[in-house]
Image (cartoon, rainbow, N blue to C red; front, top):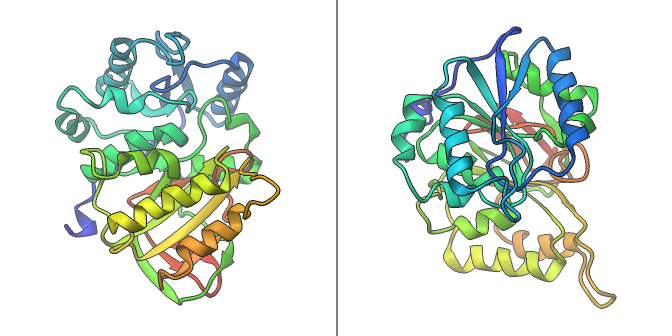
Length: 300
């Protein structure tokens, strides 16, 4: 694997800069949440502009592929925009990445991309070309973040140190690697495609929502059968919300323990990221140390 030093970091932002909101995935339904997000961004000293297609609807998508592709391209090449934040998750980013020479475009215009859930597709595409991005809140969830989580986001965007995160350690010591966050469902569908970055040497960070335990089992079993965990150095687990099974089901915690517990690598669970709760940012490509004994994820 290429040295982690080969990663390219977008320029840090500063108060007065403009962040643009786009809808590369699903259509936005909560307009009030977007206005609250605008207020939060402004309160931090930044401007928030919304792309002209930000509120488009095309079935379950936030506009046609052409509209959403145009919005992503404009967000990247417009010099007035210093950062990009997705409006929401849902589904649709992978459709945009089928066409165009995105690798050349992303390398030429490195900017902070912020989002999670379906935005995993774009974060992983950026990781393939070794450009840092941010797994974190989208516009429709930004107002739900506590003050410390918002501070973590904006401080990092300005270049300040990132505090560690505390979870529940499963043992197996410590490991270092570059951080690769993802929504488990989206990431599973990216395995073996041109959007999947190399997994050797990574600290994988996984979360999901609305997937019952047997589906979590099925996805993790696919990773095992593909040998996708073979080069992974450690796994950081966030929230797996709304993952209830039937009365005779294992819990999602039991499934995670069964499918991951024998990998022999450091694992930390109950970290504060994912859907339906605090979504502390995780910088993609940041070199981190995962302590499976103490339950800590920290920057190296």
